Image (cartoon, rainbow, N blue to C red; front, side):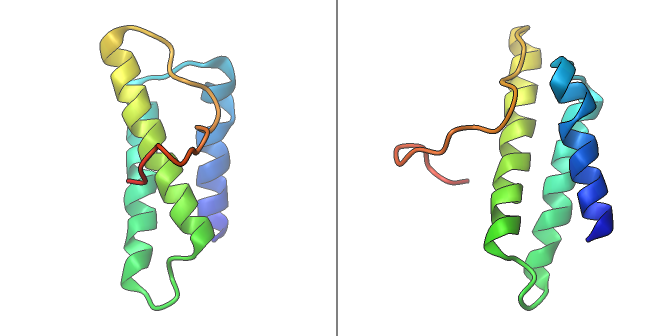
Length: 88
């Protein structure tokens, strides 16, 4: 879990604070999501907390890719979950 915490802090801090998104940043969120997805293979591996982190990684990757295509800055910080927004 230490590696996951390091990856999470790396993903969230420097680039997001400066709002710089590159293909590399997007790729890191994709890989983080894939890593978390592997937890489904283990008994008791996917907790509610990890499910939320998976949703966050997927959302940040999708938003970052869309922002690069559109030439805009991606949304910084976590998304606001609403009842009308479906889970991935």
